[in-house]
Length: 423
Image 1: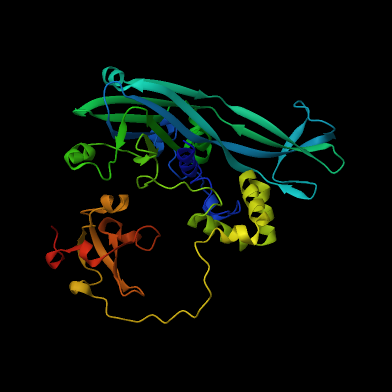
Image 2: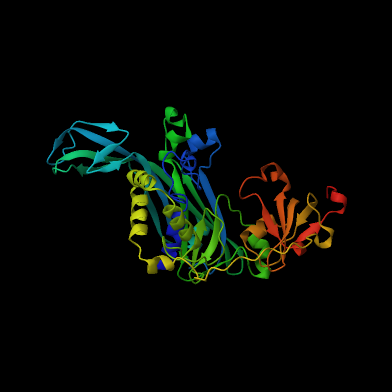
């Protein structure tokens, strides 16, 4: 369970922090873009999502039990206040005003948007009961306000960090249906049922505090096992293909007795990624932080408590600890000049219209791209003399200049279309 929790934590904070940017930076002009569920009242009007739905396969019997643990982030407004009259202790009735920044003991404090964790646990439910009557539950998370006093050099309270979190109501629905002997299809739906006023729907920024950020769930069973949708048994492939997943994807974790319903595409049995552990994203995060000036670091630390803790952790790391972020150290040697070889395998040409046929046993992205039409953007060779065909999906051709819209395949994974004609 500790490993499962570590994997879930990586998903929970995936959209909270990627790079330690300052507040005015472009990536922070619109936050919480990662798999957010907005209140239905707002989502229906603004084209956002208010629910996510997962279907998966369970091998067991009517007595098998399923437990659900749902987690997400509640967006918290962090405001900075200045007391009109400093006092030896904080009085909630004291007069204060919100300010754009406040300097306490030579440390600057800035407003920001943080988040707190929310969790909804459902006790184990019998599969037989779920077949007869779907289970539906509503969870209410009340609004919260907290005050963190900030003391001046003389010990008097001169400022406050005020954190305000809005109420969020969410629903969880779970049902089951038999598919074959000892095989059941589970359906899980998670929704945001928060009630909002009309004036809170005027913009995404106003609606964001009522959203469920990075929602995900862990399903566990004590007397059954979950089946992979990416690589199901051959006789259950039709049943796996019939599973509908909207806004999420289920992957196996643990000993196939646990399933992570993730808002991002993962492979089965993903590895836990501890923050500042030994993962590539931690390497990037650390290197990005080390390139910032002292002023940039100070501004970042002034705006977010988690970012400040991350920077402090980086600054306190020894050379030995920092070395653990890397897979290996090698002596620097001059990089050889690349050998330019012709790169037109099987007559493939840039601009040609093709169909994608990824080899069997690929990852989730390969499965999603199988059979799609694409245009060849480039044909390249690497230093090992392997050929890579860069393509962009036909419907995304206008977006080929943006990150995440180019995909690389081996020549044998490309099916040519005669004359580029429409199939």
